[in-house]
Image 1 (cartoon, rainbow, N blue to C red):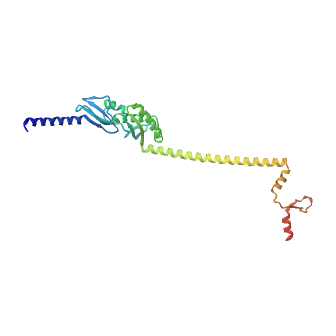
Image 2 (image 1 turned 30 degrees about the vertical axis):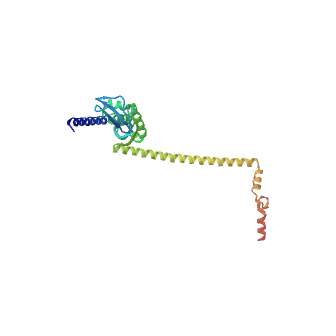
Image 3 (image 1 turned 180 degrees about the vertical axis):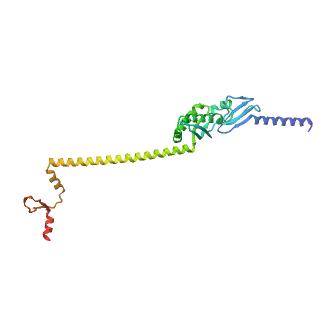
Amino acid sequence: MNSKHFRKYVLTAVIAFIVVICIFSAAFIIPPGNRGVLVTMGKVSPVFAPEGFGFKPPFITHVIPISIRQQTKPAGADCYSSDLQQISIELKVLYRIPENMVVKIFQEYSGDPFDTLVAPRVSEALKEVAALQSAEQIVTKREEIKNKALASAKQKLANLILIEDIVIEKVSLSKELEAAIEAKMVQEQEAAKAKFVQQKAEIEASTAIIKANGEAQAIRVRGKALQDSPGLVQLQIVEKWNGVSPLVVNSGNGGGGANIVLPIRELNQSKTK
């Protein structure tokens, strides 16, 4: 092999190597759940790259993947209540970057979007809500505090980043304040229990009065009926008669004694004895 052919082979190999490098430099892969921001010589492309395989100008363009999946990160805020009590709140924030905001956030905000955008807005919202509530309300009405802070944080972030939810994990107070709130809650529970017992007694008393009034009314009705219809007694006797013929025996003390009504069956038994 002469030198001319050797140089030709070397040149071909170099060209092939350069082509392979260019191909690899021009290709990129965006992982699932991400979108790619293309930066060409310091200029950001207004159109993001979707997930999957793609091509770009080699060497001069870089692709930066940004996640659009929901993420969860811890946050916190030191707040002051309306009664000037210092309260520390620990929470978790569930958020995600909208697909149409990937390029804007990368271009206009540096660093981690959570640190630069989400955490400060959530902390600010919590402080604003806590300032309108007493320390006791912040402790006992966590769900209400969370909902108000969530709505405020969403409004502050507009459409840049979507905050899905806020989970308050811990509310820390001073030991003295915790003891005071606990004592007040115990007193309220005891007062509620005493009120329940009182209401129960009142209901039972009212029931007894109603029952007594009903019985008295029934007695008056029966008395009035007997007064208006003397034969009603005889009718009730007949209705309750057991089929045994009675015998009326005079007491023997003249006309003033009471007559004794005996069933004939009892009379016969006395004669047999």
